[in-house]
Every structure is written in structure tokens, then in C-alpha cells.
Length: 313
Image (cartoon, rainbow, N blue to C red; front, side, top):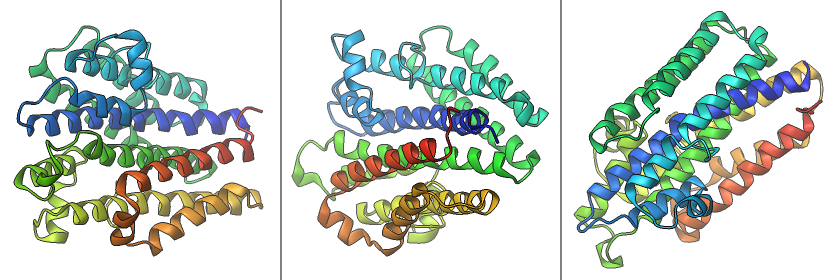
């Protein structure tokens, strides 16, 4: 396969996943801020930080307000990670590799772009945000569903899935980190009803509230929730699940091309650390520190895949 085709598929699905996950990050910020007594615009500092756009936002908006932060994350095309930018870039990559996609996948992608471009044409009212976030998740789910149900399981499929899960792992870690940037009023409230309520909203933002209840009988504890989203391999948005899929798709590529690259070793090492790790060890290190290190290693893997498979040749 040409490197630029692999690159187009990989980034198409990274952008589609990122669009959904930026919407989920906004949802997490909205849900957590609603649980705080005396919530203020400063709550959005943590959301922007977790999205990796805090400094870029400050160049455009000298003051931080909830309305401007939400607008910047959802529809500002000067932000390359906004939902609108991601949908635009996802569609551009899909158009570049149009002949490598099934008709169903292309149509779902193009329809998502048309619909969201219209919905994000104007600044949004707060009352419209929940519906918009649901539409973004729905549209991105339709693209993945069309792709999963119609594509041949070959290297085209593998590069697309690797892009999806690298992006999902990145964003699950960032959503978890929102809880640590959007701090409780005081350390003494850790483990309080407010703390538990905020953790519950984090679960809801990643569509994991009910499945968490099945595993832990609805007992909301921060360590269990972190364990569920980091180490529980049955949870499709957990870091452990993402790395199971990344490693398996990289292994398929190794079989197809007859060679193993540095990226295979890096992915296997990350998966192994997640399989061996315990939530007690992670909490001892510090959840925020663990997540920061994970994001760095995840980015390293992405760079190694780009270089190893010569995406720009």
C-alpha cells in the first residue's frame, strides 16, 4: 500500500474519533461544572488544558469564559482540534482515499460533514448543547458502523483501526484527567458525595455508567472508576482495551508485510504495562502523573507508526 493511502486512512479515523471525543470532553466539563457549588468560568481551564489547546485558546481569547471555551472546542476552525475542524479534516482525508473506502463509509462521512457544518454554522445556546453532543456522537458512530460492517479485513482496515484506538486511548486519558484539573473545592472533599457525583458524570460522558454498574454493583469509588477506564479490558473505551486492539492490528500488518517495526515493540510494552499494572500502583504514582506519561508514550507510538510505515511517501 502507498504510504499516503495508509496515512489518509489512519488520520481519517483519528479525526473522526477526535471529533467525538472532543464532544465527550465538553460533555464531561459541562457535567462536572454543574456539580460544583459556585461553579465559574475558570472550570473550563482544565477542559482546555486536557484538550491540549489552553495556550492556543489564550491567543484568541484574552479572557476565559465558558461560552468562548465551548465555542472554541466545538466550532472554531482556527482550532485544529475543534469538532468542526476534525470533521472537515476527516472528510478531506476520506476524499483523498475515496477509492479505498466502501460507498457506505464515504456516504456516512460526507453526510456527517454536511449535517454538522450546518449545525455548527452559528454560535450555540447552552440549551442546545446536549442535543448537539448527542448528534456528534451519533454521526461518528454511524461512520464507524458503516466502515466496520462493509470493509474488507485487510491492511486498509488495520491502519484505520489503529488510528481509531490510538486516538481513543489519548482521549479517554484526557477525559479522566478533567477530574483532576477541575478540582474539588478542597482536598477534604475527596471521597465525599460531591466527589462521587463528579466521578459519576465522568462515567456518563464516556457512555460507561451502566456497564460500570454491572461490574461494580453501582458502588461509585474513584479507584474503581479509574480502574474501569484504565485497566478493565472488557470496557471498549478503556486504555487496556484500546491497546489490545492496537497490538492485534499491528500484528496483522506484521503478518501482511513480513516485518516487525519499533512500533510493534512500543505497543507491546504499553499493553504489557497495562496488563501487569494495578490501580493501587497507579494511585501511588499519582493518577495525573500516570495519565501524562501515558499520553506521551501514546504519542511516541503514533510517531513510530508514521515513520515505520512511511506515511508520507
